[in-house]
Image (cartoon, rainbow, N blue to C red; front, side, top):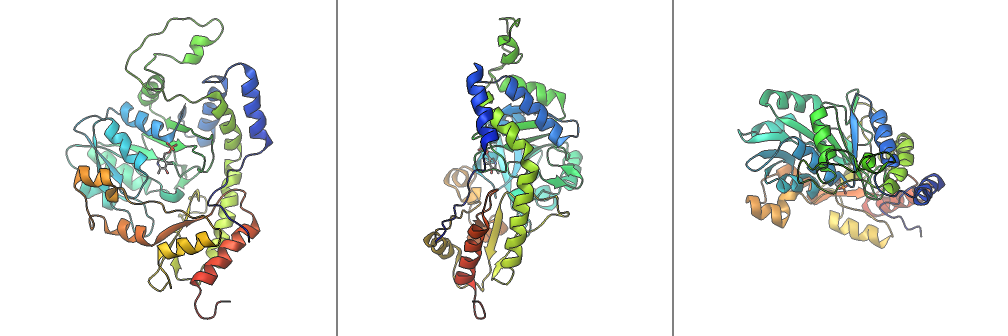
Length: 386
Ligand SMILES: *Cc1c(COP(=O)(O)O)cnc(C)c1O
């Protein structure tokens, strides 16, 4: 029997040698590799953005909101259907998240869902491009403009993804955070990137990622650099290491190829699962829209078992799965802090109860995908299925 993990990292000698080169260079932390990675990343996205490398997407989200001046008393709108990092950074700054439900088809927030949540305390909206499918950025930008709000994209799933003709990161948000966590669409082990075309946001984020120092440590330590620096704010320790950046530069070169590989796996799942009692994930408006970070299926009422039983049976067959996500309003902290309960976000609850994410990763082998598909047919296929 083939065991199929939920995810396996795709690295090869290029990444390994690049890391060894850094290890031998005499300089491990933020330096030339980070600068190079930032330049490559900004080039990859285009659209006049600059990139700030940090040690996680959570750090990038925190820096983004901080640079927008979000603070106590402010409200920031975000989905309940997301990972807790999206909302926790709002609390870091003493502001309050206002959760909204997701669209039943796309699993994303939409202008229609966000509009009723806007109050006179609202300062920003945080769209999450769920699973890699872009939100309606044109609609959200219009809404933000009308109400004088900022947009900070949580693009942890969305590299590369396109809203209309624009890659996420250049699609109208004031700033965008990407994740290079180990199981994302490209990785540096741990890492993240904040991108923006707003010089004020970029300047503040660059200072705050390293203790509030008024210029890059790289300048300070390079030959001929001065020992002098000033501290302009109580900043954070969010800088990326050159070890991580060297890995990231090679992963970035493969990002488009990685997406094409996932896209082909998705086409096969779509075709082979179409007769089973499940809802397959929504596609984007164009074939390039979706990054396909996750392939989330939802069981229909006709399915012969529920989601939990299916996960148990797949585990039994050696197949790893995951659930993205338990909505935040069902988590103890968020539920108690904001008095949230069952029934507040009906779409998110219905989706949560029936959804699971199938294995989808860059070096998934045909026999691995065969095993997932044939096991799903065995477990869910009714009369007429082999
Ligand atoms: C992974 C993830 C994050 C956090 O990314 P890190 O790089 O691990 O900090 C934030 N938001 C979403 C939606 C994620 O999936």
